[in-house]
Image (tube, rainbow, N blue to C red; front, side, top):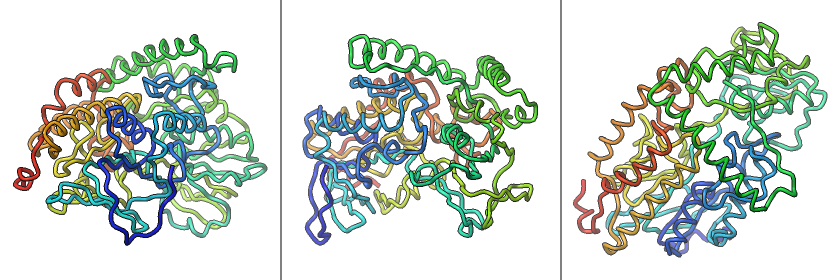
Amino acid sequence: MSQPNQGGAAAPVETEIAVIGAGLGGLCAAAALLDAGTRSIILFEQADDVGGVWQHNRYPNVACDTPIDIYAISYDPGSTWSRNFAPGREIQAYLRDFADRHGILPLIETHTEIAEAVWDEPAACWRITATDGRRWSSRILIWAGGLFSRPSLPALPGMAAFRGEQLHSSAWNDAVDLDGKTVAIVGSGASAIQIIPYAAEHARQLIAFVRTPSYVTPRPDIVFDVSQRDTPAFSEGLRERRAQWFEQFEKIARARFPMNSALIAETEAVWRDYMHSQVQDPTLRETLTPNYRFGCKRPLYSSDYYPAMIRPNVTAIPRAVVSAAPEGVIDSDGVLHKVDVIIWATGYDTQNMLGPLRLVGRGGLGLAEAWAEAPEAYYGTMVKGFPNLFVMNGPNISGASATEFIEGQCRLIIQALAISAAQGGAIIDVPAEVSDAFNADILQRTESSVMVLGNCHSYYRVGHSGRVFTHWPGTIESYRAAIRDAALVGLRFSSVRQAATIP
């Protein structure tokens, strides 16, 4: 990985392909491009290392809530995992090792945040500028920032006046000491259920604000002894479990799209039996019981969460935090809770995934403006009006395992680039009518899903209650089939002269 070079006044560096982001999506794209023979590639990473969310999220107990058997890259599954729900530090190390072995590390510009990328129609390339003034031009641009690139930190009255320590889960400070303190954790999603057991163990008192409880089922942990790792039997076990988890997640997808009440009720019954076996207090049971259908929000795995919630030093508050005061937080009933530390486990602003990045396509249209009503993309990968731009892990292709969808995207990108090369470097885009028809179909399919009909607000939806923009409305296998049989034929390949006439 290279360090940034100063000197923004220098001429732009030319490259064939530029990738913004060196997380899972960016690394998979780079590996696929290198394997296909492309050598002129630059990856931009604003952090000091690869890994994306696994580089940023370092809070206690951080781990993947998708089994590594299916989360790891299919053709490079790893061989030294300590457990099947892998700790975050192991995933970050795995991705760095992946980048090293596939020759990606020398291509990465770390400490490089891209401020804008503007499509130059006459030159048929992207003009890219970093926040420090450095510039590049690239024929192809791949944005791989991801859905979870922008933390959602509430802007509540009084936060600046709080006298204690406060931090977001994505910006954990190892210097924060919870021992003997009163701690507030705001949130009840994926990060909260991992932090709460740690905080309950260390804090004198923990106040957990559970405005919207999650469905939490036991995590089927498998711990691998050092002697088991890096063996043929270990690899075979990964393959067998990958197939098992694949079918399990396909079952969940079939229950979600369209909503299958009978299948969902079966899962809810299993969850209820488990939760009731862990939580005896009727008031706490009520606090921890969702009032929406399973699958409407993100289902979670943890075997430690409910045991932590019943500890005598833990209090669950079934209300939102609406403001802060110098000595603590104030809930929606106006009750002041005096605390020493506030942990905001409030997730990410998925709708504004681009953050401050300015991406400008044809006619001066910015991608943030194009996505103002709802983020949308053709097979989650191309956006009308933005030629030669590919989006990794974009709108409406998330699901059980991000990796499965990302690998499908990589196949589409490589095939599209091969056609472009065969036509002498033709411009690639998706016609508006093709994109609109595709996204209308996606919208129709998501409207019949449990995510819409299941009585919840979630980050899956625009404004938490509008259209679903995060998930592919079907199974992984249906996405694979669509990429194989339909996606490529909808793209348009045109010469620079032809592209100049496209409105």
